[in-house]
Length: 332
Image (tube, rainbow, N blue to C red):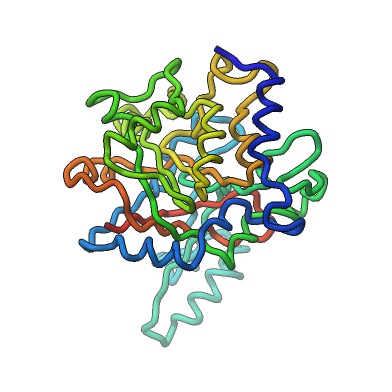
């Protein structure tokens, strides 16, 4: 059942962290990650098992299903054929420019090289949402004006502000799929509630503590890998989980689906879209990770019963960006 704007504003007032770490703060809940927390996380790497949680950045990714974000386009700018083939058969302007220069350099030199580039939205696959990604009523996190994000990028709360802090902490996997039943993914209409998060943590024998990064397995990514349907909807966290995240003082939250939260308006707030994004990014200052590949990690956690790990997930320091690709690494 959808909540009301009155409910939303009441929760927004309760979870808002503006001024908590000073009026100039642009890190939000990453401030919970102290040096002691980083050391605690490092102590969890006991077996030397490494899990890459990033998806492939390529033409078969899920973003191809959405018109406003395309899948990455990978282009070779220099390859083995440039040494001679393009000089002979390429267009005149190219023969007289790039290929000719490359060929001349190669003429009496055994050295060869390949080069490439990628064109993509910064949130095309596994990603972090920066605090400047979502706002409402003309305000970003900590009260910074929304118009400080211009065509030049985000002056406040850009992903580059995370650079000096980094994102390394204790990660905790909450496996909704296994809790609900094997071979199940969170279908639409089944949002994950705060009470269910508590029940999952209890059943896994793991405690959520301040500074943790909570990682939620909804089964969506495993489903996508099987079907290739990036547009297939799936459920996620109920918007009221923003209060749960605030109360547990977590540093960030990530999931294997598109939006982390449940996108169904019937389970949201009347008159809004993605209310948990609004509460987390704009009010709480809590970053969201999306499209994380949790298949192998969740299988291992179920096998050994250990649902905590060192999580290393720094974004690219793209100046003024409102999001960033990431290849998170979990170490157990």
